[in-house]
Length: 40
Image 1: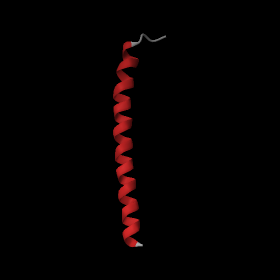
Image 2 (image 1 turned 90 degrees about the horizontal axis):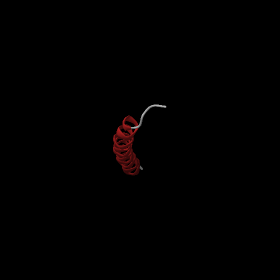
Image 3 (image 1 turned 180 degrees about the vertical axis):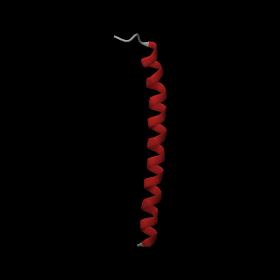
Image 4 (image 1 turned 90 degrees about the vertical axis):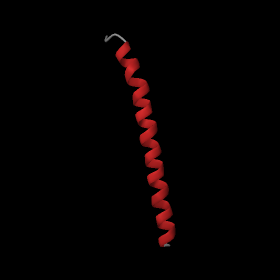
């Protein structure tokens, strides 16, 4: 049980890291495009 819980936590932290990476790369990709467009 304890071992299973540890696995779950590890998996969740891994997913969180992945989300962080995806989110930051998305921001990195979207922000420059917004800056290049003239404000309406």
